[in-house]
Length: 106
Image (cartoon, rainbow, N blue to C red; front, side):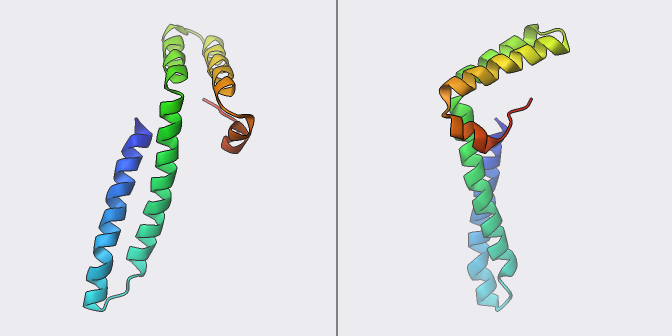
């Protein structure tokens, strides 16, 4: 649920930056920090939204991976669990998405 937490925190940061901008302008102070905060929080919001969407889309595969890990007592069996998860994700996702995400590693 970390992407969802990032989504909430980025939204909070974006709102704080948007609220600060007119206050800084009214005081005649520089607005660079507020604009920078709005920019960074907007990027973080977009990335968190994509990560949350991906997590929800692959929820069944990730749940199966977590269950597999519970019974995996060795490093090699954990690797097998990850291989199964990767295969399931590859079946569900288009190939170009996996390339864009880079090598999926545990």
